[in-house]
Length: 380
Ligand SMILES: *Cc1c(COP(=O)(O)O)cnc(C)c1O
Image (cartoon, rainbow, N blue to C red):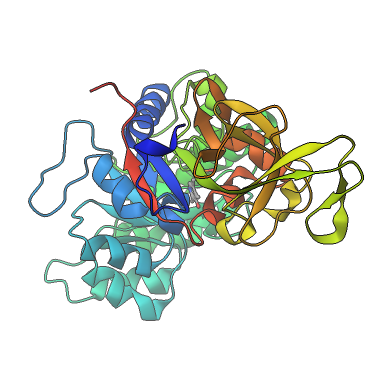
């Protein structure tokens, strides 16, 4: 990366590659074989929910849905839905986490499809000011995650409320589809049992869904049901190689200082790194206050001019130091702390592993302080 192509004021920022994002959604759609509910919770895993939603072509005021638009968007809190609606988003929005009865009226106002699984909530939702009764909701079934939803072996208790107020969809969620196919199969089977117990109380055209990113990646054939709900894979955070996904997020920061250190001298807090040879050290203007985690101290790598430079000493809140003894660089150059520079890539999966984090936590943490810019990787 040369400094000149970036605006001079930027200390550190995220480049969000919207072409890569769309590529990933196309790959996931093709692999799943069913329409998608793209998860944009936690501000689209730190990537930016409004930016992501617009890029995916869901309808916004003044711009109709594109042919490639996903079926809908998935969120976890009503404030997230409000932020999307305030920006003019008119997509179907599904709230996959349980909400309290006191929140149902707001969900209705926001045009959110809640996940419900208690008879009283289903009745309250149906009664909310509807002349013809009911707005769409999705029935949540717990098949072993033990987090939310009606237990798979107790769905018979909901038969009459479901018959009276039929849901638009019914879903479950996997706990280990990324590394345990037996557990996935068991949850698949429990889900089928749960639906059988509801029998003809469920509408024939009900939208059934279960696959998260790991679920999609785990299938040799298409995802079961009518929809799938990828999150992390959309953002290039997991399953990149098997699903042919691209890096979406690139964390950049500038070289803001350069110095020579002599043999025996140390770098950063705690003096955890000592020069074994005369070394040239670059100070990069991002630290754990920007989501570049402290655990990357003396472990991480940063790209400068497409070359790997090891992190030396502790990552500090606002800066990190790297060894550039053999790498030409100057004040103002742009370092890549995550993502691609030239032919080199520090993938989200790789950096998360080195940082001892899940890719989810790494991505979500990047939104702390740095601004995002949308970039386009396709040649103009
Ligand atoms: C977060 C979430 C997803 C997406 O999971 P990923 O692992 O990010 O693909 C899907 N469904 C539910 C219910 C979720 O909470």
